[in-house]
Image (cartoon, rainbow, N blue to C red; front, side, top):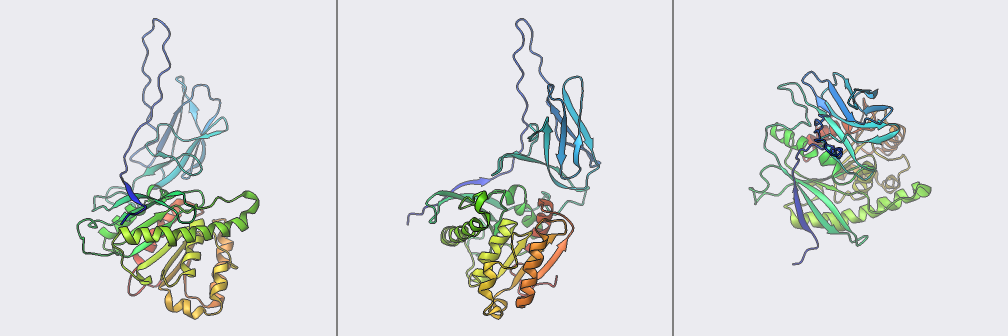
Length: 385
């Protein structure tokens, strides 16, 4: 049978260093090589040194989740630098501000393109013997594979990434439950693997015996573009288009190409921000297909249309749902909307788990949520929150 999808690549994370090219030397002079800048340099004590060669710049700062905005000083060779910290172990988004222009660190090993331009991050490891839950460890590792497919909604070429747990390629007679994991409005299908470390978190939890082996499917949530003038209307149109793409194109691809266990009780959906709103819409709107739903810092509201569909028989939702898990940071700009959403769940008496944690709308928070959520999935009994 001819399929409209094919495997493109197995994702591998590698490192690289970008250096500037030397300017042509004056006639008769021997070109002097410039030293290779190390930036960011993470020290054993948790301090970080940022460097940027910009001899003509007048003002340079580094902007980093870990320390806010920090001014940098220029040396005689035109290299700007600053040392910050010590910084707690974690992964932090960072940028340079060069005379008002935001740029990524050209020497960083962790620069990649995204939906809203390039970005880079710095990683501070945990102390010896105490790795972070999202830190690469010497444990068995799964794989992340990229697929291209033609959407039945738009007829356009689209991409999805799929995590398979360690041993998937060897245990050919085994089927697995599946989690559909959705990104936010500023991201794409790569974000949960690159920034969210979903595969690393899953590997570590499996090695510790804290999670069930599962497939994690990471689709691209942007099926239709939204105009600034029609945010609310376009939001629901875009969400409906994503729902169709997921159910009519992505899910059939996964069912055809992977060994997936059947039944709603073996299917979960979760996401962050925009993806959290999508997971609520698709999950609660299709309880015959998803019994586990997670919403991280979600773009939801108390009058969300999917809740209106449940008003006539909320008891049916309780009978079908294994878990509805909602979490948000106390400093998140979506906090009020999430509280309104949860109040509606309370009014409808739909069972759910809700928590407010420290933090804002950031990957540091979402990685922690995923590490809490994965161990709850596909269990006969869900532990109390």
